[in-house]
Image 1: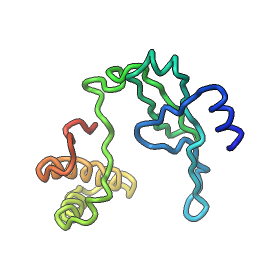
Image 2: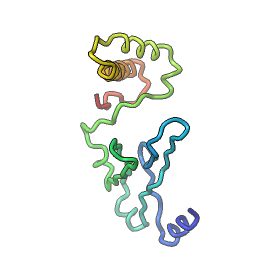
Image 3: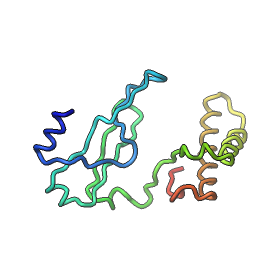
Length: 150
């Protein structure tokens, strides 16, 4: 890595950073064998940075590969497209709230009977997501949960 950073420095390149998940690779294993790393970088030189002052880098979520691509938006207004909602994410800080635990329990119990466990689990997860979005709006724990994709 020292050689890589030295080459970046010699070429006048800077890491552009990222928004969201910083890990671009995982070994797709479970438990103690699971590993994920941030292997990829988006780089720019001073000329590029002067031309694209309002840029953003996003690690793109994929389900069919062990590697996630990165996407560079040259203009942040392209990154923050109205109507393009961010995906729902459970916030770790919610786990400390009793009312959140109750929301999850109630949503999980409210599901109907299904022909198999997978269908019931999928419906329960969807129900939990909807209830947590509603709950977070009321409790004002997140800056803009109405932006979430349902």
